[in-house]
Image 1 (spheres, rainbow, N blue to C red):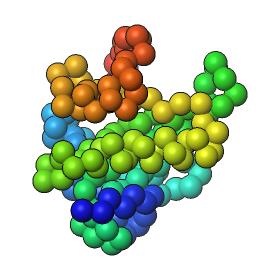
Image 2 (image 1 turned 180 degrees about the vertical axis):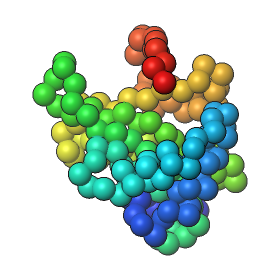
Image 3 (image 1 turned 120 degrees about the horizontal axis):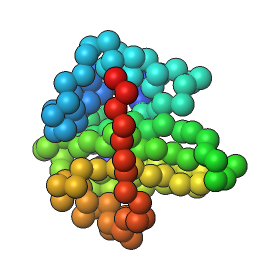
Length: 151
């Protein structure tokens, strides 16, 4: 398997939708079609801070995984932060380095562009992913997330 990662483009929509649906199913989230369509629109709009990467098995090969990320300013640095919001590997491609490759691609892009950091969240019980995340980051940063729902 040769992992090739490229920015998500219009031709990737069906594959992206299938993988994003798998990601949402993993987290037991049922998004409205309008929300999914708006997320895809944002990914394709260069004026938006939301972007996506697709991992494939070779150039033009079958999809393996995706990441959706958001670039934003922060108050602690003049540099850009990258929030890796969604990371998903298709079940048949798990354990083959796809998640690591997607994270490393974002880190490489960030170093080249001068970002301050790439950061993300995961569920406490997502032990498989947490082993990968601990390996690529050296461990958690000591912060605990709180969330106040407003919808």
